[in-house]
Length: 235
Image 1: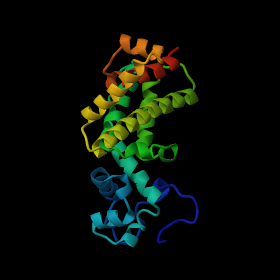
Image 2: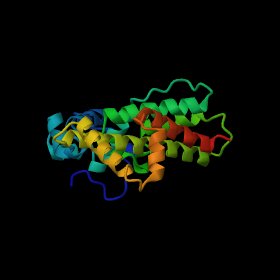
Image 3: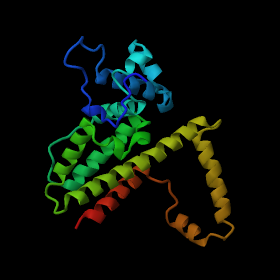
């Protein structure tokens, strides 16, 4: 395959263009933007080197001169959307700063619903990911903890956000695939649950729903999950 390295290589360590020769027709930013457009419009599984090349108006094999592997393309995509974070000056309240950043992450993942599928330490050290980590660590400057502990906290927060949003996205996608409305689905399931609780076989569930019948505040659940992670670190 053209351009595919025979040894492990980080795309960011590879020069975007050679020192000599004609100026490349496309930048990495161009390629990433094309791939993101496809993923946003058609879904992550629609992204291919062939489609990205067509979007750019070049041959598929030519694209491999810029991006040796499809995995590199994914890394470019994730870095591109990570460039959308806003990094205000840390407020001095590290909990508030990290919660605000988590909300930004949640919103970004809902704009680009394929992102949770790519969240992996393998893609954790791109330029915009490093900016994100450096900023997050700056929010933790006043916290008396070792570097490794701070990185664990960042990973736990990212894990909560990614898992939570992935479930939200999966629920929404399932609802869109059904031949009835989400409200009809919920009514049918609620009716079944009530009928089962009414049998008396689930007294704890019955007591729980009597105490808190719902509906569930999903935004509140998200915030409480974040606070519990932060509580475990706050000492």
